[in-house]
Every structure is written in C-alpha cells, then in structure tokens.
Image (cartoon, rainbow, N blue to C red; front, side, top):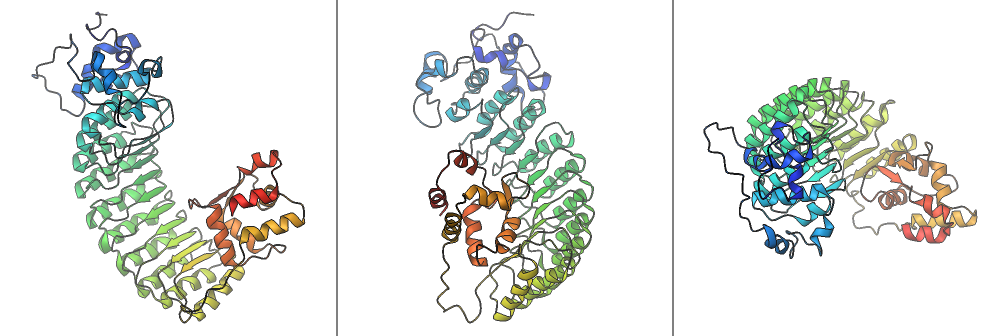
Length: 513
C-alpha cells in the first residue's frame, strides 16, 4: 500500500474517512486517510471521467487548519465550544473524523454534534448547516455505531444534502430514526431518498420528510419505493404538495405495503378524488395502524371512501380526519363504517362542519356496535345539547373507557361550571385512611404488571372504582396530569424507586398535583 499523503498522516481523524461508494466503514483504519478528500468530492455529484482530479498530496488551506483550528473551537454554539479540544476528543475517532471532514469541506464544526457522537440521540434542528455542513456530518456517521436518532430539520440541506445522507445510510448500520423535514429537498432529493428505500439499503424505521415541496413526481418515486420497502414503519409526508394524483399513487402503494404502521399525510391536497383512490388502497392494507389525513379537503366524498375502508380494514386503530369540510352527511357515511368496525380506537373529526346531529350519529353508531373498541372521539368544536349528553351517559355506562371530546353544551354556556374536588387529593385521602402507597394503588390497576397502563384501561378502572368516587371530569383531569405528553400511556415506573425509599404517600401525591 502506498504511503499516506503528506499533511494528513498526522491527523487522527483521517484514519476513518473513506469513500462510501467504495466501502466506507469496511476499510482498515490505516487505509482511510488516502481517500478522505474523495469522500467530500464525490458525494452528490455525477461521476465525470474527464474531470481533473485535485492534488491531495497537500491539505487545502482552511480557516480550521493548524493553530486556527483551536480558535474556531471557541465562541458560539456553531463552533467547537470546549475548554480543551485535545482532551475532549482524545481517543474518540468519530469526533476527530468529523473535525477532519469539516476542515476538508471548509465549514465550521458544530460543537453539539462533535460532543455527542457517542450518544444515541443528536438534535441539530435549525442549525443552518447547508449542503456542505450536512456532508461533513454524513462522513462522520458512515461507520458510527452509536447514534440511532438524528434530527436535521430546517437546515437548508437541499437535494445535494439529501444525496449525501442517502449515501451515508447505505453504509451506516445504527441509524433508526431520521428527521430531514423542511429542507427544500424537492423532487431531486425525494428521488435520492426513494432510491435508498427501494433497495432496502438502510436500517431506518422512522423517516420524517415533512415540508419539502414534494409534488406528483416525488409521490411517484416514493410510492414505487415503498411498495417493496420492508424497513420503514413510520413515515411523515405532511405539509407537502401531493394532490389528487398523489393520493392515487400512495393508495396503490398502501394496497401492497406490508410494513408501514404510521403514516402522516396531513396538510396536503389529496381532496376528494385523491382520498377515494387512497381509500381503495386502505381497504386491503394489513399493516397501517395510525393514519393522519387532516387538512386535505376530502369532503363528504372522501368520507365515503374512508367509511368503505373501515368496513373491511381490521388493523387501523387511529384515524385523524380533522379539518376536512365534512358535514353531517359525511359523518353519517363514516358511521356506516363504525357500525361494523372492530379495531378503530381513536377517531379525530374536530373542526369539520358537524352539528349536534352528526355528533349524535357518531356516538350512536359506536354504542350500537357490540364489537367496537372505540376509546376516543374528538369533535371538540361541536355545540351539543342536553339530549346528546343523555345519550353519551348511556354510552358511558356500557363503555367506561370511551372519551368523547365535544364543545359547549347548548343553553349551559353562561352557567357557572361545577367545581370538582382535586382528583389527586381524593385518592390521597383514601390511601392515607387505608395506609396504602401510591405504588400499591397503581399496581392494583395494572393487570399486566409492566408499570405502563393504557389510558383507556386506566379510565375504565377509575370509573369502576367503588372505594374512590370520581366522575368523568375528575378522571379526565387526572389523565391529563398523568399523561402530559399525550402518549396514551400512564407510566408509573418512576414510583418504583420511591417505593424502595419508602416515600410518604402525602409527598408522592403532592408531586403529582
């Protein structure tokens, strides 16, 4: 093997920089430095046999070379803000490699990235990286085995940056979650990502591509890729420009995809015809669990297509069709699907054109379906009446886990709302009287014993408590406190340590109040 280029042999970072096209991350460390410059020159550009190759016998002059490198490490959030750079990166090849890549690309290193390359999560949203900055990051991540979740939203990386990310992902074996939303990727960037997905060449299972100006051409290449992709489980394509044709293409994809579980298409332009085609694909899908179609102007015609899919689909559990110009007629169509569906748990229909008539139909369809597992219906903008409230109480008697979120009650707007005792304090009083701990209380409710209770199961258990009398308003407030991030789970695992420390019940409860 030939000697290493002068000027790079004493750079520890160069030991891991290789060209992803020729086996990055697979070459012996001492062979890497000879191709460090090739890595930055070759990505994102078509090969040109006649292009004059740069002389790599000497390192390029750069504001980060030699003594000035230390100066670049001092100052703001966008440079390496460490007291002793040599000590901070001693023995950490990932950070050293990143510094070398930045030097070659002539960009200022991002301290947060360099200092967290040994951690699983790195957030670089809104850092103004640009194509060159993200190229340096891609070089550093080719053989990285620790970072599993990378956030790169709003960095203006463009299609060129997307190509570098795609090349890196072909070699990287650790990244599982990637966010490159709002980066002006356009069709060319979509094609680079689609090529990666088509070949199943990465280990990504979560991919966020929101707000990248994807239109029909992007929809076509992404749909084709996802037809054969078996890796991606969660995909965010919201805030793009998919229209009716895009809905048709993605619907065809959905009919054959067997892996995708979460899909966000909110804030697109699928409209009626696009949703009809999409609904056809949803009928035969056997994998998708969560679907967001809000803000797509699907109207009653789109609602009809969704209803037809709900009649036969046995997998979908969460559906968001808020803000879609659906009126009572469309709601009645949805009800036809709800009357026979046995899997949907959450239906969000807020900010449509419903009145109390449509709201009554929705609750009635769930109540009459013995196989329904509905846990939440959100019609938060609908003004209801006392007749609706009575119907809801009847539904609650047989379905205590159900939560219907509605607007004001007609004729009761001006009334002073009923004051409810703090639910936590009510529970605290009971526990004190019976010499019990909060841990004991949750363990009794938790049938699986995994310290994580689904909100629906928690709501049902609280409604059925005979010793602690709480109404639905109190339980709803309790759920909001215990599940502040709206994960759908009441996680009480942190109480295990408190139990071991024998923390007084009063102190435990005060922390929750």
